[in-house]
Image 1 (tube, one colour):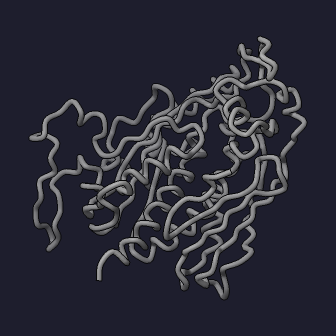
Image 2 (image 1 turned 90 degrees about the horizontal axis):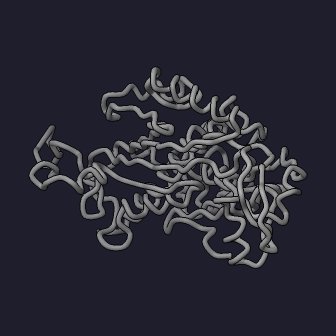
Image 3 (image 1 turned 180 degrees about the horizontal axis):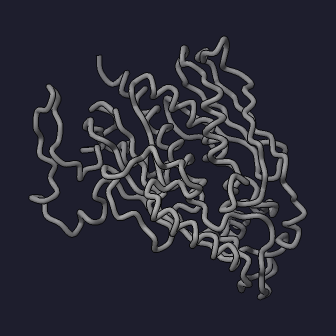
Length: 359
């Protein structure tokens, strides 16, 4: 199977399945001398882990990070950093009824079409459980980015039709962790929680949008052709389970506008080249311009629901499926640290690439 690695200079490879013994990640290319803050890495894992609130799946995984290599005396050594997360609460029997059935909008059929077999226990390698390994690696990338003053924050900006109307610049982002939805607007968060709770009781699910902001980037990270910074961010986000959309800066709104309204005029401010607006989302020509990089990621509703759905068996017979097992009614609150992690992985990779781009 190809496609288990991500990045060029700061490169990760994840391994493991949802119902196997463990999942994990190997980070290759992390420079020596990075302060390895295991407490911070574990904090990020705790933000993603299942069973953290009434709004998430009932699966309860501690997700304690075991560091196997690449760290000595609290610092990275420049060798591959291997981190392991043991699975403990699989309950594979919950999936026995799915062995001969394709779940609607899951990877069951397509995985089998590609590989000729599949792991019906939670989706195996295609399960969102794999993203826990990304969060561990992304936390290490954030520790590296800290040294260059780069800060990444994401929050839930929409759940179904309920959305935060203010731009991120008008929100108090210190309030993101003040509620289970991870929305910094308290009134909107309460409406989101009520909707998720109601749909969970109905056996249904709902999608949403996560907004992410990376601040402190210098001008000059990214490439001008295929590896544009926004292109790699888009790939990173679209590689996350359930993601169906990505837009950066003004995004699709700009498509209906005019250059006179959406061009970001330059000015000299505090001795630096700055832009008066930021419709570009901090990236121009595939390269960062020193402004905030901000974008939005759209997640579809969770495919596994408690309502009866029409589907097919593996032999092509029509049947009805009412899924069992433990699943999130809305994935976006737990996906916030995943979006942050993938952002950090892209930025860490491009930061290292920028260091060798010129003498």
